[in-house]
Image 1 (cartoon, rainbow, N blue to C red):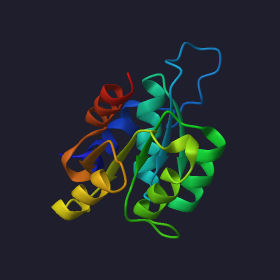
Image 2 (image 1 turned 120 degrees about the vertical axis):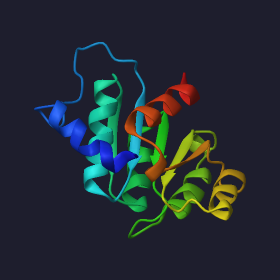
Image 3 (image 1 turned 180 degrees about the vertical axis):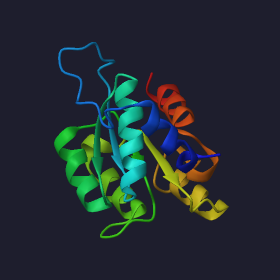
Image 4 (image 1 turned 90 degrees about the horizontal axis):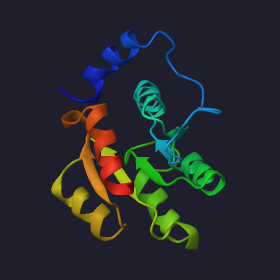
Length: 150
């Protein structure tokens, strides 16, 4: 079980892999930034969140994620820890230095799930939650987002 096992199910249940950003359709008005270097996973999460009525934006590393956070002002950020260019901890640290993002909810979505990583990102970097990729599916990620921002 986990995200990767659900990728195929999401793709086969949806003939249009990535629905366009909802325009003129009812949405919940919430924007999610997905910072993930695995393209298939980022795409699957974009599909899932857009189908749930969220506006979703993605970034392939922490540097692009930081730039998109500033430009897009998301309501919540899903953040991988291990990425090229800028890792998730560095991005989160730089994000917290910006006044507009002191309290923006950030969910860490990583396979680097040892207790030290979990404790460090939650205590020192202010992460709202820490989810282990291999232990959750997209529906559970959506549920955690809803729990945090609604």
